[in-house]
Each structure stands twice: as structure tokens, then as C-alpha cells.
Length: 198
Image 1 (tube, rainbow, N blue to C red):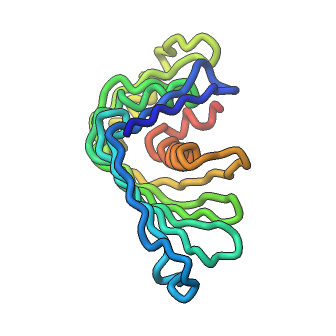
Image 2 (cartoon, rainbow, N blue to C red):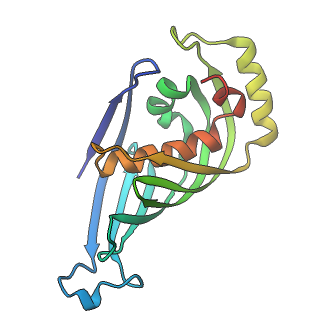
């Protein structure tokens, strides 16, 4: 199964887009026996896919069935892939283009409760080269791009970041997954100097 997701960027420029290719999903520990619905054995949704048809993404989502309000724990890992494949989502929102570089591994772990998604991310990556873009025209900002690349050369080995997202009432699973992970990607892969411009 292939899933393509696009989103109009209100404060950015253009349209963000991602894809999940060759997706397989398995749902286990589903029962109507309340005696089996314990915190220790929550329902489990296991997903495996090619993110942007490039990097292997695996996600495990744990959902306690007896919780008074819906909550879940989500843990996943994205394998090695070229950084340029995530440009379609990052460029319109963060105003930065990844022109070169390799994501080695990204791991994330989140909890969603009362519509708030919080968690942590670990990103390992190499050889990033970026271009900082004008907010309205998306033209390259040469001087700022040079400064950012100098900072990246000093730090682009391993970064830890935070995941934070507030679930909207209209959000489906794909949007929750992407927006949660995107907040962590921005915190780990996008230089602080760019985040402060938003």
C-alpha cells in the first residue's frame, strides 16, 4: 500500500508533501475481553514502510484499550536515506533546503495523552549542505547559508531533540505521525539560527 500526504503551508510557501511507500501494517492484541485489556498488554499497531520511497521506517504504536481517554505510545526508527528527499516538507515550512547530506538513523519515542504529543528524537547524520531561503520568494540567501553551513560542519554528527505537537480534532493518524516527527526533525536537523527566524 502506498500513501501520499500533502498539506498547504499557511505560513510558508507552496505545498508540503511526503509519501509512505510499500506500507504494511499489523494490528494485534485486539479483544473484547476486558480482563485482557491491561496496561502491560496494550493493543499494538506495527507499521513498516519506505519513507519517501527511500528510507525504511518502522513504527510501533501501543494503545491501552481501557484508558478513559485515548492515549498512545509511539516508537519508531528511520534508516539511512539521502537528506534531500525530505525537502518537499521542510522547505515550505522551515525555509531551508537540504542540498546534500545523509541521514544515518533517526529514532523517536513519543506519548500522546489529552491531545498533546511529547517525546524525544535522536538523529545521526553526515555531510549536510543547506541553503537558507527567503520567506516569500524562496530565493537563496547566500551569506546566511554560508554561516549555517559553517555551524553544521561543527555539529552534524549526532543530535538529540524534542518532539512537541498538539493534536487537532481533524487530525488523522498520518498527520499525527508526520507532524510529531516533523517537530523533532526541525529541532534536531534545522539549525537554531533558522528556527529563530520563524
